[in-house]
Amino acid sequence: MILNHMVEFQIPHLDAVFHALSDPTRRAILHRLTGGERTVSELATPFNMSLAGASKHIKVLEGAGLVRRHVQGRTHYCQLEAARLAEAQEWLRTYERFWTTRLDDLEEILREEDRALARSSEQSPSSPAKSDKTSRSTK
Amino acid sequence: MILNHMVEFQIPHLDAVFHALSDPTRRAILHRLTGGERTVSELATPFNMSLAGASKHIKVLEGAGLVRRHVQGRTHYCQLEAARLAEAQEWLRTYERFWTTRLDDLEEILREEDRALARSSEQSPSSPAKSDKTSRSTK
DNA sequence: AATTTATTAAACCAAATGGTTGACTATTGC
DNA sequence: GCAATAGTCAACCATTTGGTTTAATAAATT
Image (cartoon, rainbow over all chains, first blue to last red; front, side):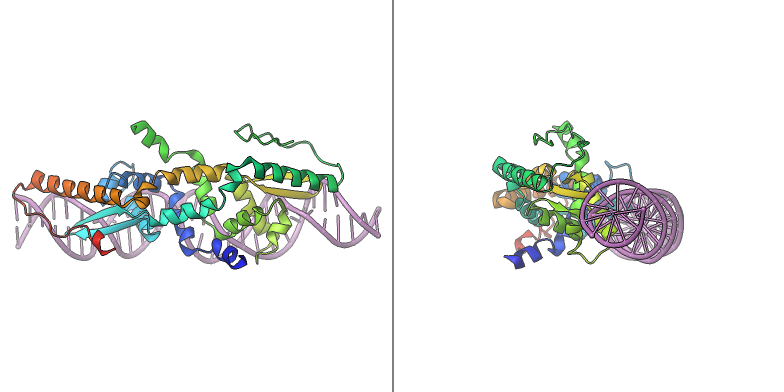
C-alpha cells in the first residue's frame, strides 16, 4: 500500500535507533548488556573515556529506547531493551529480497540493460570494480 | 569469543551503514530504489530539497556502500546495493534472542538476581535481599 | 558530620551533519 | 555554436555530535 510506504521510513523511532547504533561505543555498550544488567560505571570502565562521556552515550541509547534504567540508591542499573532493535530489523527485512534471491538481481540486471540499450550505446567504461563480494557483473 | 566481541562492534561498515540509515530522507531514497534504478534527479524530486542536497544524501548512501552509481552521459543512475544492509541485519540478528523468546528473559532475570545476590554478599554479607526486583513484570 | 562513591548537569570545544546558494563541468538537443 | 539539462563542487551556516572538565546532587560509609 502506498500508505504503508509513506509511513515506512517515518517510523519515528528509526531515526533515533539507527543513529544510536551508528556509534561503535554504543554498539559495544549494547553488546555488553547482553550479559545482563550493568551499572553505568561498569559500562563506562572498558572505554577510554570519561564517565560523563559514557553516561551521555547511555542516555542516547536510552533515548532511542534501547536501554532501560532503574535507579537503586545512587546506582543506576542499565538493561537491554531489545524491542526497538526488533523494529529496526523489521525495517531491514523489507530489503531482504534484494540480497537473498538472485532472481531479483537478474531482473534488475535485465532492466538495467534494457535502459542502457534504450539510451543507445554511448557509455563510459570507467566503472570502478568494487572488488568486494559483489558478484554482480558491473559490466 | 572475546575476539569475537572485540570485532563485533568494529565492523567498519556498520558505522557508516547505520548512520546512513538514521536519516529519513536517505531511508526514503533507499526505499525508492527498491523500484529499480533511478537517476539522481528522479530521486531528488520527491523531496523538498535542493538537488545538491539530495545529491549529498546519495553520496552518503554510496559511501556506506548502500547505493551504486553508474554514469551514462550526463546522467547518474543509482541502484540499490543491499549487501551492506544484510550485514546490518546480521549484526541485529545477534540480539534476536533478546526479543524472540521469553525464556531468555527468564534466564536474564535469574542471572540478574544472581548478580544482586553476589554483589550484596560481597560487600555486606548480611545485607537483605533488595525487594526492588526488576520491574520487568510490569510489561 | 564528613567523606567517599555513583552519577548527572552544565559549560565548553572541535568536528561532523544537513541544508542552502552560486559557480562550474559535462552532455544533449536545437 | 548556444542554450538547456544533469549533476557535482565549494563555500557557507546553524545545529548536532562526541568528547572534555568542572561543578553539583544524592546516597553510602566511616
